[in-house]
Every structure is written in C-alpha cells, then in structure tokens.
Image (cartoon, rainbow, N blue to C red; front, side, top):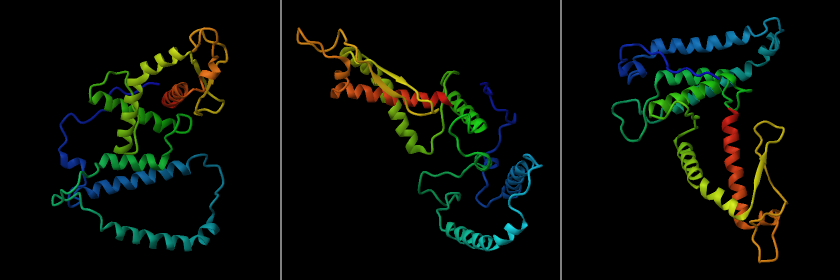
Length: 252
C-alpha cells in the first residue's frame, strides 16, 4: 500500500485566522457553503450508486414520515438552544480550560468521513478511511521526528492515547524479561488465528516434556502442567495480549 509522502499546501504561510471560524464567525459565510457542498456531494454519490435501482423510500412512505420530521425539527431546535449554554472557548474572553477552537479543515474532514464511513476497523470494511488514518499517522510520525517506516493510528481522545502509550511502553520494556521467563520455565506458547479475521489468537501449550522443566532430580514436569502455574499463566496471558495487539495493528 502506497502512502503519500507529503501533503501539498500553499507556498505562502497561511495566517492563523484562515484556519478558524473566528470569534465572531468571520469565516462562516464561505465555510458554511462548503459544509453544504460536502452534504450535497455525499447524497449525490448515493443517488448515482447503481442509479437503475428502484426507489425504496417512495413518496407515500415520505408522507407517512411527516410526523417524525416535525418531531426531528423540534428536538433539533431544542438541542441547539441547549448548546448555547456551553463554554465559549472560541472567544478571547475565555481562558478557563485547556480547550481550543476546532480548525475548519478538521471540522470539514470529520463531517465528510462521518458521512461516508465512520467504521474505521479494517481495510475490508473501510478501505478509504483506514488508508487515510494511516497516512495521517505517518504525517504525525514525520512531524515529531520518527523514521519513515513508523506508523500510528488515531485514538478517540487524549486519555485513551495516554493509556495506549503506557501499555505499549510497558510491553516493549518487559518483552525481553517475559521471553526469558518463558524460556526458563520451558513454556512454549504458539498462537494461531481463527478463521474469523481479526479474532484474538488462541494460545496453545505443548504437552511434550521440556528438558528445562522444573525437576527434582528424578521427575520432569510436562509443559502442560507448567503452563498452569501462576507464573507461566502470566506469560501466556501477556503473549496473548501482545500478539492480539500486533495482529489487530497489522490487519489494517
């Protein structure tokens, strides 16, 4: 899969005011037109997908939905009214929390991707947005100085990003210790993926005796028994979590 090496931007440095709606919505006129164009473009794509197919929601069904449309409009107006009580972090008068105004490109990109396909799971169910996510991740990697082969994925928020960073750092830090522990106890764990794509692998412990299994001079303990000890169980679970994470990551 090829990724774009860079994103073309205007040669002149854009002023910060062009990236935001502005405290008084100064950039709203042209941006609102583009939001309308995004919606129009999406519904045009729907209408032109196999245009020979018949109409499903016909005029009679639409007339029966007038009550729902009326309720939708009322509830939406109520929602917009309630949102007016939110914090005005777009205003220069507000400096109470670590919030910032959304950039216009991020708003437009979020709405467009949300309409077309918000289910960013695998390349089979989201072939375009998964690739866009990987491209964005490579852009972020390059921005902070990681090598070209680095990759990343987008999280739902800062809290989850922090948890994932700590989890990955822990896994990388303790990987040599876990492998050494597994070798010491003779617990060989292999993982196989089931027929369902993306399903977590199932660890299997060999029942063959190990020359390094704990012994009292005359007796060997087979691996299947070692795998049930608390320490070996930790190794098995760690390897399963580690393999599951990498399987999900490379599946993208």
